[in-house]
Length: 110
Length: 114
Image (cartoon, rainbow over all chains, first blue to last red; front, top):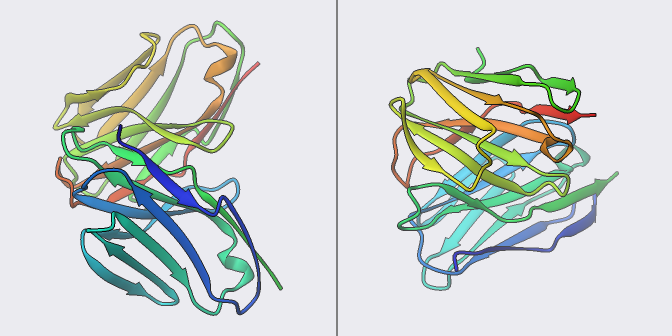
């Protein structure tokens, strides 16, 4: 069964802390997406990865294809980073639909 | 300019009514999607169209009917609305029906059925 697991489900941090959110998936994939959703807001695509590492500002996303695992890191976290972070993957043979993790609710306190 | 736009943003309606949600993308993408986000914030695919052709149709009740008049638009029509249809519906698009293409999402439509 094609599954996407995220951890932790909830994460509370103090401003300035280094944040890591993890995503594991059950079988090989063609691409993995990290998405951000602010409370009551739309969904923004942060990264799309098929291998290696990508960096955008304070956000870093890595993927290990062999271990079927990806991490999203936030350096020097800020209260405006508070949001739900969602991992989504495209499994082979799924007609390229995205399968989503259940999300990680991040709260960064000042 | 908004890349993927949905209207309306909020929709409150009574059980049994028929309603439509519209989606338009100005990115020149070939593929568009409808996703449903339930009360627990879990996202799930409903439909996908590629160049106006239905590609993905998950186990969605027949009361939900997507319509794609052209590849820039994918509207969602819902008949005989039920309480359980209350959710946030997201439209998205991507360049092509390939695994390595980025998806762009609309702002969502919060549907409340009373």
